[in-house]
Image 1 (tube, rainbow, N blue to C red):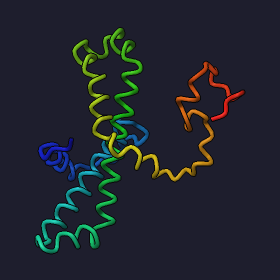
Image 2 (tube, rainbow, N blue to C red):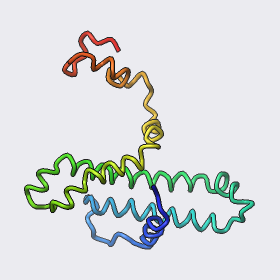
Image 3 (cartoon, one colour):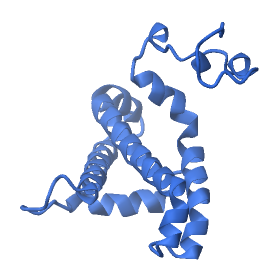
Image 4 (cartoon, helix red, strand yellow):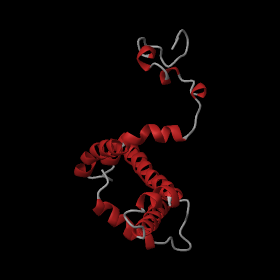
Length: 165
């Protein structure tokens, strides 16, 4: 769930910049760019809405600021999906991070819960995110994408032979 303190903290990052000479092909730089973009869009949207009267807030949001609303939502999604990707990647190699003593035991124990919490937060919008790719149904050729229960009745070892889904 998005809470106001989290939003307010992110908005403080709106004035950040990437200094000249910082390597752009670094994950930390890319994440910082996502965060700054989201913060600036959020601030701009907040300013636009603050200027609208209560009576005009619907028109301001839906008609005048709809592109900004969409851009802000997209930036939020970019950050959330980047976070989920990073958490899930660490989770899948958690033992390595812990054996190499890169991640302390207590932090390592928190990774699975952090993955689940992030999934729970973005889960309600997952279908919309997938649909946004615009992939037509007829191009989704994997049998498991259809009736996955029927597909998994037998051990088909990932093969398509004899599977009618």
